[in-house]
Length: 235
Image 1: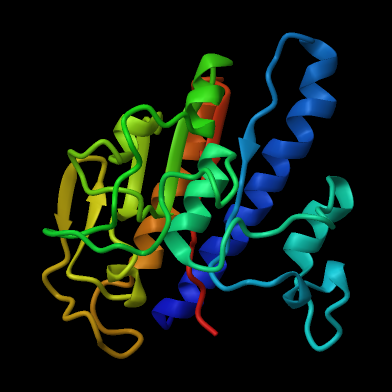
Image 2: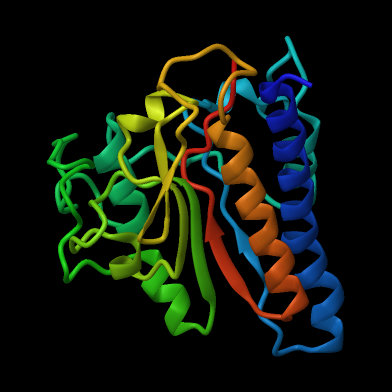
């Protein structure tokens, strides 16, 4: 099976799994245990506009799994990106600040890789959820500070991270490495630009890690807050 089709199947499972956690936990288990916190999964898809979803009026194709989430949950009809470019937009999302106050003002690239880091005193949604007793995670693309800096996911309240630290590297589905928290994962069969089906398809790894995380949280009966950040899907 081509790698991109396999990834679509994994992403479909992720959406269905997210639906189960977000909907079943609050309305079923909450009746048994009123103190049980609902699990939360926030899915941010790179370059996906509201007009690309059939639950928002798209008529040329269907998005049934996302439509199911909308039908049983809620739609955001007045939700806007914080800014027009990647890193500041993510900074607005995670810190809750608008573009005039957020610490990241542009896509500033730094060596050895990655973007200008969130400052040490930034308060992200991960911190807020940790204060409420949640385990926190992110899978996908970070772009808010290199490993070891103040913007490292670990230093911004994200207990588990897997994916691209640098948003520029995420322009390829076949990067030469990813990050598992602070451990660099070498993908030696990749050369950044290869055809589908050749090398290690990054989205398979990222989505599999996200699914494993959800399964582990369920087994341990722990409440979690997770953001698969900017999971890229093939056209």
